Image (cartoon, rainbow, N blue to C red; front, top):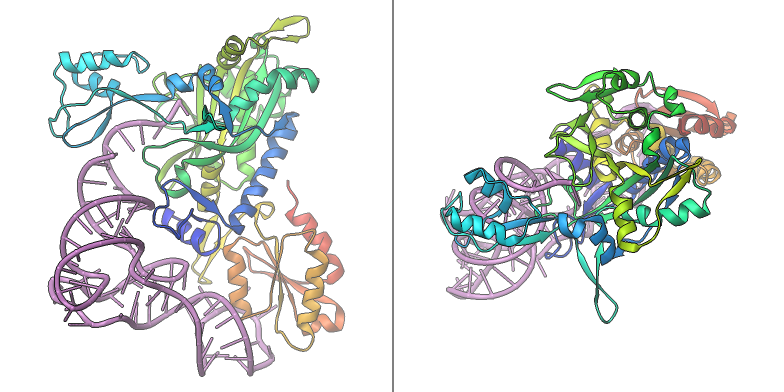
Length: 485
RNA sequence: GCGGAAUUAGUUUAGUCUGGUAUGACGUCAGCUUCCCAAGUUGAAGGUCACGGGUUCAAAUCCCGUAUUCCGCACCA
């Protein structure tokens, strides 16, 4: 299904909707999750924990969203996260100073150069607005971080633009107190904040968004010393270096040199296995190897995990080999020691990052799961049962003759164990369709026969098949079907 | 941030040119029906027509500003 149909579902069925929508001064780029969206998100994260965190023996932390200025001085965000911009005094259009100058004059000025260099280049080359030939104002820095003032003195601090800085600054304590051993993965789920110039397309470019980040600390001398690589050597990943993505096993990707070492190949493998379990169509995915110009300022090697949707390729995860960029700069700035012992060797660990955009992932899951069933005139959200916000609908065929009471009783018995939804009202077919749209994989219906022999019908979402089971079997059937893989 | 288009109930939409406080559908709720795959039946709720200002006897409708959404450009570390 396309963006519009997903949007309609999101609004009608409580997946997500605009923030502060009752006020006309609501800002762009902020969206909230409703009950269905939260259900999906929580389960998505539980799957992430199982398939990545627990599988690899990582630890998870939960850091502050507001962090001090020094953190971002060290991380480079205060210097590099800001773009030099110029504004046309006539038509008010904004441009990147470095790019505009390079386009017109072929003069390359690094983006973190002194602002006066851009102004001089503009003056000397008489650069005018490409749109209206107007003159430019002097170069300014636009930083995408939200600044906040702490306490009565309003001391400078920032909302984090990525969650991972907590992981870096917490690394020394965690390694010492949690009996750390390289390679060590530390993960975090939480919100990040970026003052995007043009937020667009609901969950796809937000100013406040969820990330699930993993930083794996490793000994740079032992990147091919990865025993668990055998777990994924035959896992097929899709990699794109030139025009088209190619399917290959992790082993082939490694041997062909496309992926630099076993360490990186292993994580690309388990990441693919994770996404396969979310129901996203992996045949529409690719790890795109980024060129030097596209990479983040801290990345040595970078692969974007992208998935094809009806609005184009969407970047869901950035996989960056950040080397010792972060630890060495935090070490320098804070004067804390970040070296650790790996066997008998003292090393400053390198970092491989798996930075996942949760909101975009959820959108992609919805788009890839939402299907139109023409034959039965219905929309079906074919979520994996373990990701569905509602596991099972508990319905009475009709309300009277004690069926309602019997249905309530069944609901009462399972509602703490499963995400169950009780519904008595309206035509049975309509109730089934409502459940189809929020992705509930099962519906249990109490009818007159239930009162006689204690059996109910259980209906499957995708096939619409029904079978009769005893009430006592419900628990084990559901337990088996909605369990995480 | 620039340019374009749009904004009417939960969703979708008529009405805007030609000013007289709003239409249909779906959905929701309550009842009847007791029917196992929505759209039988009766009834009900739900809209200060995005927000603010102006013109007018009168504004969803005309004018100005703002916000949001979508598209294109730019941006996306």
